[in-house]
Image 1 (cartoon, rainbow over the protein chains, first blue to last red):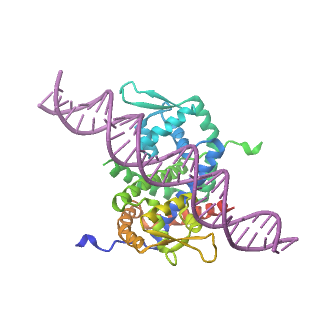
Image 2: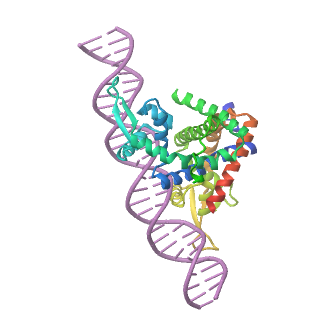
Length: 158
Length: 158
DNA sequence: ACACCTTGGTTCGAATTTGAACAACAGGAG
DNA sequence: CTCCTGTTGTTCAAATTCGAACCAAGGTGT
């Protein structure tokens, strides 16, 4: 049948792009993970939770919404929020309009932690990625990967 | 002191590039993981192990070398190779020149599995990433992230 | 009010990942 | 040869991750 044609393999350039993406992603994650853990005792995931909460209107977000922003599973988020709660960086508050709803909310201590951890993290992201690339390269990255993400979000929700 | 200046935060474009990178990476990983698991019963990591072995001279690589290519921990690789061994896809062979050395080696069954799994995987990578981007965008991605990876490899070994 | 299907979060068990500690060996300086 | 240092791969415990099952509650149509 026609649909079982030989697949279109990746040519040299395409493969280079794909390998570069995967490799850079893994290397970066490892490095950032290490830095954050040593510097602030946070995992990258935990740090990102603080960031997203801090950026949200009242420093709080519904669990599901937060999970989507983080691109993680609901159960994974439940676990990490519990960890952060034990550290006193995040609190849970129930939603007035929906009894089932739970807000994760940044505590003052959580805000302080973020203030303390952010500079080192940002500096490293800059050193390892941002400052390595030109303005044009960054623009292409934002544009291209933004589109990729958008499409993924779409048929993921579908 | 001068070194404790206000850190250089990321401006709008830089942030867009960084968020796009992280988000796309997470979304892609999730999606590929799901596809491979459903389609072939392999994790992305396991699939990558097969790929790297298949690309290697004799279908075999030293554990340490393989771990570096995969960008994973040595212990993590030990675990996964054991799993693949149980599935009959990979074998271990000791190194003639170094008693400590261990070669991970692709079995015939492993080669078959890769042949079976590759088309679906490649098709998805193409659909979600490669075909979404233009030739120019891909070139920038390969070039830029290649450089990023290269630098990371350097001071990682240092 | 009632049955019904979707949502929001948590719980549970299984699989995976990591760094540290370890044991055995390689490679070279003296 | 002998000591010393760096490698190699594994083992171990602890932390994390995921999906499936689950419960409770929302919202809808009748």
